[in-house]
Length: 506
Image (cartoon, rainbow, N blue to C red):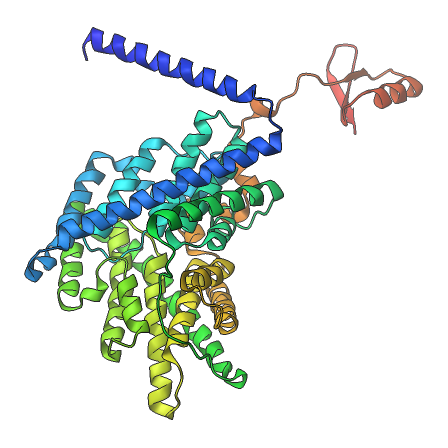
């Protein structure tokens, strides 16, 4: 690098730093009450996260149309492989950044780094998932969007020079707001941040920020993308209350299916990283998985991409049962293969798809075997919530997301029943969320509580105090009591004539 270039870069950096410091100083001098300023920051966080989510959504659509529009169907086989090959080059160029992916990265940032997410990580994980999903890989947008919302909000907090505690709040709020925007579900975004990002660590200021950010992001999403329900269906019949035991059975089956999916995902993760990727180049593994994805999509196009159109097709009864069964099996097999071989995407949409197919197959089987007339639509919707809640261990978020995405309250009781049964089943076998388990495999003991991780990040020098009160050991009791009453300290050290500590009084 030439000296002039270095000089110009240094000048630009110093100017940028100067303007940022002036901006921060100006913000702090604004005569606005602290709570009002906090609320403004929360609304701005929601606006930024909402716009980022909309931009990501449009980018995925653009890449999808570029990949599949006016493309001969035979080329569908290689399109996902091309996408995976591009991703392998990106991983090769930025290996450390590529590893910091998904919801788990936001959890780590909030729990252990005061909400700090490097902006280069945010940029990388904007383009990588968009390419992966846009070229047909059967993953969801919500994990990347949560990371995008959290990363943008983290940068926003850094520019404003917020404390670690506040930046942590707004990083979580940004992640929740992005989820609210992509699902058009403000309540779902709020409880997603509480249940997953904050690990159910409820505090009043945090909740206020989540509400303001999620509502703002959802409003922006509705203004730019429309306010139509994501899943469309005709009238729904949940059946008489004495048939609700069928929803309990569906919840149990959804819980077992969730456990199976989690166990299978762990197995794929282990065999890929401990065996296959040590012997075969990563790019070759990724391209092979991409070809498997393309071959599946060539015969069953419903498996491509996010899968909402296929879910609507199942809701409308346009899919025959054996096609639905094949799609569910393919989704279960392919999602972990793509994710752990090197792909980028989320689990929400795949679990919605698996739940929808499972609910349909359950109702179809009951109707066929026992001659009942169950409304398959109700079981599709309830199955979606049950598997979403089971795999991700988010019972409240799952209920609210399904409710808000359908804009229908009719089936809320069986939905709540099945989701609670499913998540309880998963807790019995797994004892924790899939995201936390993933972090624990990396060596992060998030489940032991944030306090333990905070202690790991603090040095002795950070908590050492120099303003201690030393009391000569020959001090009289009356003088000692007088000193104790006047001192703000809770611990006092006694010293001898040589200044050596001989004991303590608490």
